Image (cartoon, rainbow, N blue to C red):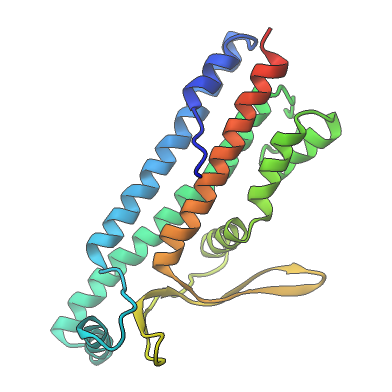
Length: 243
């Protein structure tokens, strides 16, 4: 069952113990989370408008059309050029979706820092440093656990690697892909494999991922974990900080 965070409740609880100057800053961070999710939904909807979601129903008309599109684009025909433009717009929405979703982590770290009075003025505020501060101060263990659940999830690790790669290193191709394996016929845009980061001195390889799985499945899991974290933060504030 999906857990929904109530940001307005978080702000109301904070009003009970935070000074006005902190509340003025907190307000904009709290408003930013639903705004970022709205951006995610916008880019998902625009992608769906441009690219028909794949259906796994064997060698059907849609699959044959997808093969035709690849041939047209490769041949550089006028129809193929139109497909390339549509593909460019769709790819742009995938990247914008990922950046909007990824930025919620940094925004949440600011919310945690302010609401739990972590006093991280001398440190860069991000999820990792907020978690370190929680552990050092030995407070809000469940908030820490929920935050760590996001950071260590395969969905967020993929999102983080994808965004940091396209932002700081290189583009990752998102071509039209057709799977003709019998019984597993599928078509659509697919994010290519890439390498980001290391684990035990070995580079981490990320497998290709269908865009519809990224926009739907990964988004659902990450947004649900954000809801769990927010709900736990509200609970802790009410139980231990509001007097």
